Image (cartoon, rainbow, N blue to C red; front, side):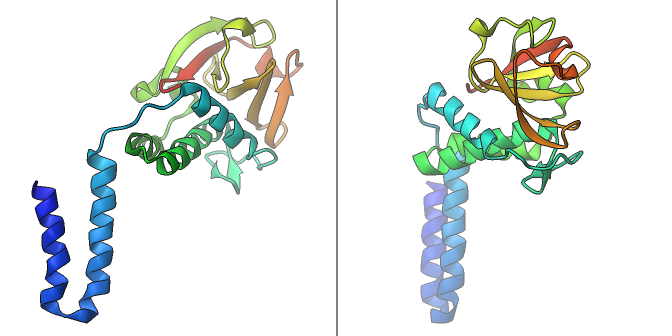
Amino acid sequence: VAIIGLILLLWLLPLWLGRRFKAVWGLWILSLAVVAWIALFPGREQSPQELRSAYVASLESYLGTPFVWGGETRGGIDCSGFVRRGMIDTLWNRGWRSGDPLLVRRAIGLWLFDNSASALGEGYRGNTVPRFKSRSLNSADYLDMRLGDVAVTGNGGHTLAYICDSSWIEADPTAGKVVLAGVPSKSDWFRMAVKIMRWQWL
């Protein structure tokens, strides 16, 4: 009720102040309404399968992006920034398109609270949950894998995302860019112990 009253007040105020202030106040009102929608309204039921597919598509759109330590943009990205950025893009875009403020809030939260590869492997802020451990990606049980699962190497130094058919996508410092890789692989990342994590909303 208080928010509705405030919006009405801000809508009526320009009438009292004159025409030149209407555009400015109109923008303020619109901004307040959007913030209120994002902050206060509940989420909607979302299909985890559709979110997984959208996440994989988002990750694939970064193929060829240069590897840059600490990067999280199409101009340059690192391994943990890559798996996070793909999820931020997915939640943000699906939230606005489906009218789901919860997804928008989650996207903002992921953007605000940076995660290292190690933090993703530890379930930082409850964003990821552990599924299982494996001696390597080459020997992992792919029957238990789902699209969008994130592999974190045992030393917490690298992340990869599962995209389908024993294939992974990663921002690889050795290749110097975002690449696809399949199993079996001779890459060091595929021969070391890993923790398989899953985004909590997938």
